Image 1: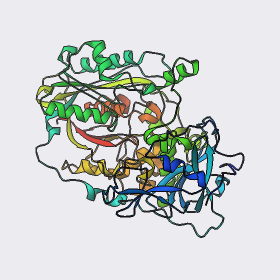
Image 2 (image 1 turned 90 degrees about the vertical axis):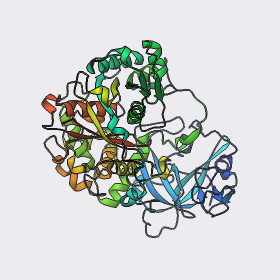
Image 3 (image 1 turned 180 degrees about the vertical axis):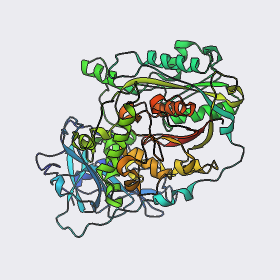
Length: 568
């Protein structure tokens, strides 16, 4: 099956076009991106076990064989997800357009991110049969998919490699009962000014948060002998301040240990690295920090003072960006759609999360969005990428948050009672590739959540307050189910009416407003709020008697969770 794309996702002009981002061709991927030259789709094949491998790899993930070739496939697939993008536009790909995922009939384990073309989005149905068509742009043939002429009954969603209900069976047992968590504590927290388009230098926000955290712990900067951050130095635009090197250069701290990198589950990963450092004796007091200046960066880009460069797309993003899947929203919207399809979840289910966070933000002076919100407000908000509307998405902002991780034996002599670390959950059990991973939940949530409970005798019923990653509403729902606060697929009933997650409910959730209303601090703000609650410092929003808190972070990066508790 071949040819050119003859209609867009909305039935108008062709969805593809010159100017859209294109992948950089390499010896490893060129066979795929040039397949359309003769109208035939080709995918990498393991010659030992005949499995199809996508994206291309140097080894088969199923049998670990290294004899790899290329197979010409049928070009037929099942539609397993789609989202109508309204918010984001690209050169050559103006909104609205449909980002879709299809599972190849030849091997449904292979999923392609693509655009659905030649149809009205209202006619798309999960499980319908699709066929490939190619759009030729420069030296690339983009494989797009349209509904096949012959349609039988829709097929079911393909099976996950491991069903969500069985993810815990992959968790490795503890290697020792001597837990590093017992040797670490959180002793200080600090936050900079938080706001929209502060037009402040990001490093100045970092310094402000760090100085406040050090003072909160009753320490001095000279006591700090470790630094940890996420994502560290690199081309991260408005998502970083320059990393450990920038802060050390500014403050002259001379740490004996430091850590910074993007391949961890956000700020939670830097905190756990710090815990390991103090538990291993490399440092006594580690200053962990996270800074974002996303709204200022965007403003400067509009003024021509900053912005991303051009060029071809490389790495993991090259399999999604050419089709306009430029945001985590495009992937997670399809996870939400499949959760709706499989479990009967609705937009209102997600709405209760957004309303809860807004109600809590009303009691938090530092929150960006504090005005009241109703379910009608939520449902009628402008669409971003279906089924997400504006209030399903977190609030971009400028700000920094810092947390001090100290050796437990040093923590007891400091200014405030320490917050102790009961357990962490970090194990990867799912595929890392965004569009190849768990269908119905945020990828990289189910494994870390199951891992957490193997490192403690506490249970979900012992948790007094939950600060769960809510970059999008579906992230938060995924963590609620994964951590066992309700069963897999039971969030619709658990969240109905919002009572269970209210401050006086069975699981007080994101008590400062979360990222949906307080502001996107990539999870470090959730840690800050957990410490506030466990100290009893929440004021009007305080959950009475809070002694155990669970915190999660990671949004389509490897996820992770921490269980914190008071010393009482």
